Image: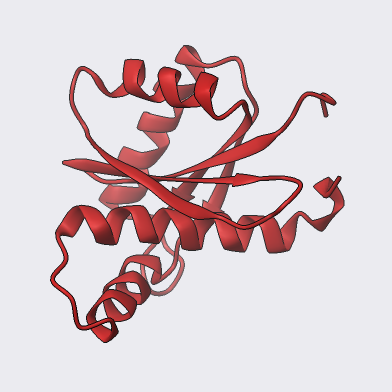
Length: 141
């Protein structure tokens, strides 16, 4: 693990949007950052975020069916991750994203304020990152 690793970026990958969350490995407090369109500008936008946030590792939420089986979205996310690896010379971890979008939507509903689908994606990425940080306590500085 490089000593320059300052933060971790998590992605909640969808067919239309990619939710992005970030956490410093010192503070270990993930926060929603942005939701990007899954279009031809995506990797350039991610590269700018990686530089700005001094990201040393990427975490991609891995969707599965309710019984843990692979689905069409699982395959799509794995394909996306291969493309992501070709754009970034960073370690990439896959993190189970079971029910993170549902949890995010429930949380936003409880706040009683209007929200957009993009808000759900960014918050879901935050939950993915929370789970990853909990499972990787050894990376604390």
